[in-house]
Each structure stands twice: as structure tokens, then as C-alpha cells.
Amino acid sequence: MLHEHQNLVDEQDTPAEAARRSRYGLWLFALYLLLYAGFMGLTAFAPGVVAQTPFAGVNIAVLYGLVLIGMALLLALVYAWLCRPRQV
Image 1 (cartoon, one colour):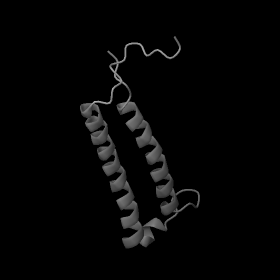
Image 2 (image 1 turned 180 degrees about the horizontal axis):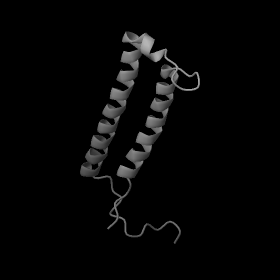
Image 3 (image 1 turned 90 degrees about the horizontal axis):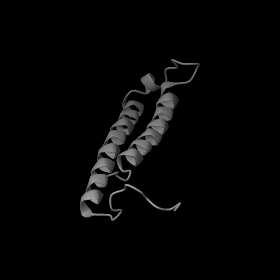
């Protein structure tokens, strides 16, 4: 009884479900890629901007890096939520 899945649609990995999950993954990856490209662009072309220390002596490069890590975790949670099994 503990392992029964009640009210879940068939757990078969249909091509439509795989395509849906792939689309979600690609969109979320594209979003993260834009954020990362912004970080790399600032680092490469505006080193003076990322060297500024707006918060507690921590420069923008470190803060942006921490935001990137947080966004990776957040996007992983969003992906897991979007791809959860559908209920009937």
C-alpha cells in the first residue's frame, strides 16, 4: 500500500511527455544561459562595474555569482515542479 500511486496518470514515458519536459528544460536552460552570458559580458567588457562594492564590501562579481548559483537551484526546483506527475 505504501508504494501505490493513487490518482496519477499512467506513468509511462510517452513521447508527448518527454517532448514537454524537453521544452521546459530548454526554456529554463536558455534563461540561465542569458543570465550567465550577462555575467560573462560584464566581466569581459565592464570590469569596473563588477569591481564595485555596493554591499558589505562584497563586489558585484561575487554577488552576481551567488545569484547565479541561487538561480540554478531555483530553476531546478521550477523544472521539477513543472515535470511532476499529473494527477487525474
